[in-house]
Length: 275
Image 1 (cartoon, helix red, strand yellow):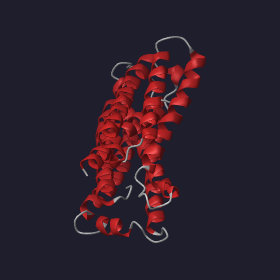
Image 2 (image 1 turned 90 degrees about the vertical axis):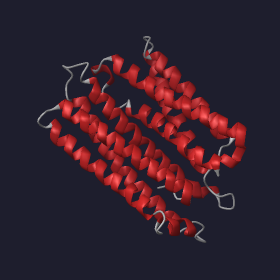
Image 3 (image 1 turned 180 degrees about the horizontal axis):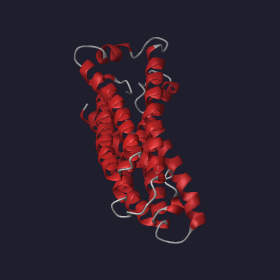
Image 4 (image 1 turned 180 degrees about the vertical axis):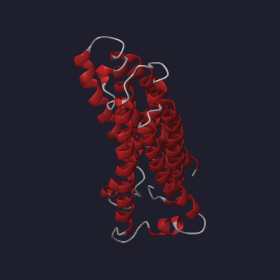
């Protein structure tokens, strides 16, 4: 139980690393200072190493009792290595190598998330049932990474005061799309598990909608709604335009998304449902 609890929360680092790397593709690379990608990439690569280290520690100490396998550990180590290699290319002029390493690192990150999601499928159920878990983790990673990248990008306007609003507006659109996609995918995943033959997750759904965890479920849904509302406020603020106010709202939005993900992971730990 202790190992399972720890692993459920370690995944938050992995989500942030993978989603953060993906979000670096949103601002136009050749229209911004390289420093933004260096500093932001360094934050996310640190998250990648925290995830890989946590995964390896749990595997060595608890084995598969922590929902960790050698394949998942290898996947996260590979992701961290590729991400580090990509970050290195930001300090040198190797555009072809950088162009190849970025999609490779993104693919490795999402593959590691998929393998991690499969670890939450009960052993007596077919691995096909891991699709809802993997899909929920993938969209959760995109949403988390987009929220934090939006916050960091807004903060960059304090450094580059003459930067055009277009990169921040593109990040806003991406954040909104990620939140909406996460809602759709998670709801679809939950419905799929609800109608799964034999209803192996019936007890989990009873816990979600029972007295003990229903408020946590409400908090998860409320976080989505509040995140969308904050993104609407950011849109209105950028129309003024007022970048510093928009950045402050991005800070709050990133916090709301993080709290929502924590609620979802707590529900995953207690009920086995990837919300």
